[in-house]
Image 1 (tube, one colour):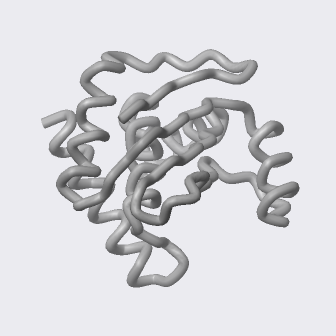
Image 2 (image 1 turned 120 degrees about the vertical axis):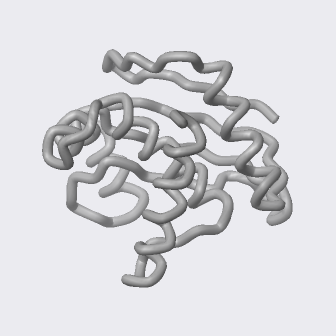
Length: 140
Protein backbone atom coordinates (compact mmCIF):
# COMPACT_ATOMS: atom_id res chain seq x y z
CA UNK A 1 0.00 0.00 0.00
CA UNK A 2 1.66 3.17 -1.20
CA UNK A 3 0.42 6.62 -0.27
CA UNK A 4 2.18 9.66 -1.70
CA UNK A 5 1.78 13.37 -1.09
CA UNK A 6 2.95 15.91 -3.68
CA UNK A 7 2.44 19.61 -4.18
CA UNK A 8 1.81 21.15 -7.60
CA UNK A 9 2.98 24.78 -7.60
CA UNK A 10 1.78 25.40 -4.04
CA UNK A 11 3.19 25.13 -0.55
CA UNK A 12 1.43 22.92 1.96
CA UNK A 13 2.45 22.26 5.55
CA UNK A 14 1.61 18.61 6.10
CA UNK A 15 2.89 17.42 9.45
CA UNK A 16 3.70 13.83 10.44
CA UNK A 17 3.18 12.16 7.07
CA UNK A 18 4.15 8.76 8.47
CA UNK A 19 1.34 8.88 11.05
CA UNK A 20 -1.13 10.11 8.41
CA UNK A 21 -0.23 7.35 5.95
CA UNK A 22 -0.63 4.71 8.69
CA UNK A 23 -4.02 6.17 9.66
CA UNK A 24 -5.28 6.11 6.06
CA UNK A 25 -4.08 2.53 5.61
CA UNK A 26 -5.88 1.53 8.83
CA UNK A 27 -9.04 3.27 7.58
CA UNK A 28 -9.02 1.09 4.47
CA UNK A 29 -8.54 -2.03 6.60
CA UNK A 30 -11.41 -1.02 8.92
CA UNK A 31 -13.64 -0.43 5.89
CA UNK A 32 -12.73 -3.82 4.42
CA UNK A 33 -11.14 -2.22 1.37
CA UNK A 34 -7.93 -3.22 -0.36
CA UNK A 35 -5.69 -0.36 -1.43
CA UNK A 36 -2.80 -0.56 -3.86
CA UNK A 37 -1.90 3.11 -4.11
CA UNK A 38 -3.11 6.63 -3.47
CA UNK A 39 -1.65 9.85 -4.79
CA UNK A 40 -2.59 13.08 -3.05
CA UNK A 41 -1.83 16.20 -5.10
CA UNK A 42 -2.07 19.56 -3.35
CA UNK A 43 -2.71 22.36 -5.83
CA UNK A 44 -4.24 25.79 -6.45
CA UNK A 45 -7.85 26.71 -7.13
CA UNK A 46 -6.98 27.39 -10.77
CA UNK A 47 -5.37 23.99 -11.31
CA UNK A 48 -8.23 22.10 -9.66
CA UNK A 49 -10.79 24.13 -11.61
CA UNK A 50 -9.11 23.00 -14.85
CA UNK A 51 -9.32 19.36 -13.70
CA UNK A 52 -12.94 19.84 -12.65
CA UNK A 53 -13.83 21.31 -16.04
CA UNK A 54 -11.83 18.87 -18.15
CA UNK A 55 -12.74 15.59 -16.47
CA UNK A 56 -16.05 16.24 -14.70
CA UNK A 57 -17.52 19.05 -16.82
CA UNK A 58 -18.07 21.09 -13.62
CA UNK A 59 -17.32 24.80 -13.88
CA UNK A 60 -17.04 25.44 -10.16
CA UNK A 61 -14.34 25.80 -7.56
CA UNK A 62 -14.07 22.86 -5.18
CA UNK A 63 -11.78 21.76 -2.38
CA UNK A 64 -11.29 18.20 -3.64
CA UNK A 65 -11.64 15.94 -6.66
CA UNK A 66 -11.17 12.18 -6.25
CA UNK A 67 -10.51 9.73 -9.05
CA UNK A 68 -10.56 5.94 -8.86
CA UNK A 69 -7.78 4.96 -11.25
CA UNK A 70 -7.55 1.20 -10.86
CA UNK A 71 -8.81 -1.39 -13.29
CA UNK A 72 -9.47 -4.02 -10.60
CA UNK A 73 -12.73 -3.11 -8.78
CA UNK A 74 -11.51 -5.00 -5.69
CA UNK A 75 -8.29 -3.00 -5.28
CA UNK A 76 -8.21 0.78 -4.89
CA UNK A 77 -5.83 2.95 -6.86
CA UNK A 78 -6.73 6.59 -6.48
CA UNK A 79 -5.70 10.13 -7.25
CA UNK A 80 -6.94 12.89 -5.00
CA UNK A 81 -6.51 16.56 -5.88
CA UNK A 82 -6.90 19.10 -3.07
CA UNK A 83 -7.02 22.88 -3.47
CA UNK A 84 -5.02 24.46 -0.66
CA UNK A 85 -6.72 27.77 -1.54
CA UNK A 86 -10.15 26.24 -0.77
CA UNK A 87 -8.81 24.56 2.37
CA UNK A 88 -7.53 27.89 3.69
CA UNK A 89 -10.77 29.70 2.87
CA UNK A 90 -12.94 26.93 4.32
CA UNK A 91 -10.87 26.79 7.51
CA UNK A 92 -11.61 30.46 8.05
CA UNK A 93 -15.27 30.05 7.07
CA UNK A 94 -15.84 27.09 9.41
CA UNK A 95 -13.63 28.55 12.17
CA UNK A 96 -11.22 25.61 12.35
CA UNK A 97 -7.47 25.46 11.90
CA UNK A 98 -6.00 24.96 8.43
CA UNK A 99 -4.48 21.72 9.71
CA UNK A 100 -7.89 20.39 10.78
CA UNK A 101 -9.54 21.39 7.50
CA UNK A 102 -6.70 19.92 5.45
CA UNK A 103 -7.04 16.61 7.26
CA UNK A 104 -10.83 16.66 6.90
CA UNK A 105 -10.43 16.94 3.15
CA UNK A 106 -7.68 14.29 3.07
CA UNK A 107 -9.99 11.90 4.93
CA UNK A 108 -12.90 12.89 2.66
CA UNK A 109 -10.96 11.71 -0.37
CA UNK A 110 -9.99 8.44 1.30
CA UNK A 111 -13.61 7.86 2.32
CA UNK A 112 -14.74 8.39 -1.28
CA UNK A 113 -12.29 5.68 -2.34
CA UNK A 114 -13.71 3.44 0.41
CA UNK A 115 -17.12 3.78 -1.24
CA UNK A 116 -18.74 6.68 0.62
CA UNK A 117 -20.72 9.10 -1.52
CA UNK A 118 -22.00 12.63 -0.92
CA UNK A 119 -24.53 13.31 -3.69
CA UNK A 120 -27.67 13.14 -1.54
CA UNK A 121 -28.50 14.77 1.79
CA UNK A 122 -28.29 11.41 3.60
CA UNK A 123 -25.02 10.50 1.91
CA UNK A 124 -23.55 13.90 2.80
CA UNK A 125 -24.60 13.50 6.43
CA UNK A 126 -22.95 10.06 6.61
CA UNK A 127 -19.80 11.41 4.93
CA UNK A 128 -19.61 14.29 7.42
CA UNK A 129 -20.10 11.85 10.31
CA UNK A 130 -17.24 9.70 8.99
CA UNK A 131 -14.99 12.73 8.46
CA UNK A 132 -15.62 13.85 12.04
CA UNK A 133 -14.95 10.35 13.33
CA UNK A 134 -11.64 10.26 11.44
CA UNK A 135 -10.65 13.69 12.81
CA UNK A 136 -11.49 12.62 16.37
CA UNK A 137 -9.52 9.39 16.04
CA UNK A 138 -6.55 11.05 14.35
CA UNK A 139 -6.20 14.10 16.58
CA UNK A 140 -7.73 12.59 19.73
